[in-house]
Amino acid sequence: VTAIYSTDAAFAAVKEGGEVVTWGHPGHGGDCSAVADRLAAGVTAIYSTGRAFAAVKEGGEVVTWGDPDCGGDCSGVADRLAAGVTAIYSTNFAFAAVKEGGEVVTWGHPACGGDC
Image (cartoon, rainbow, N blue to C red):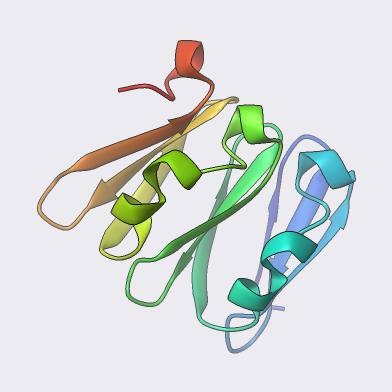
């Protein structure tokens, strides 16, 4: 394990080679089975809200899981998170990703920063 990240009730560990392993409360990011195939390798960093995780892979693709209302579902902006993300910031309920060139992409609870 090279790094461990947390929400308020779950952990995510990055192993050598970028594989992610999670445990804890399933609804707070402890269950990544829906996206496990995308987390099998290449993850370089993980960010979190109170109940969700966002992993950045080599090339800047973002993969999310956890509570959909807290950023665990980025499907509404997935096309903009497919590549080029350089950093992610978060509140307890939303994420903001910065892409190459400075574009900002947000998702999560609209009233808590998820609707920019």
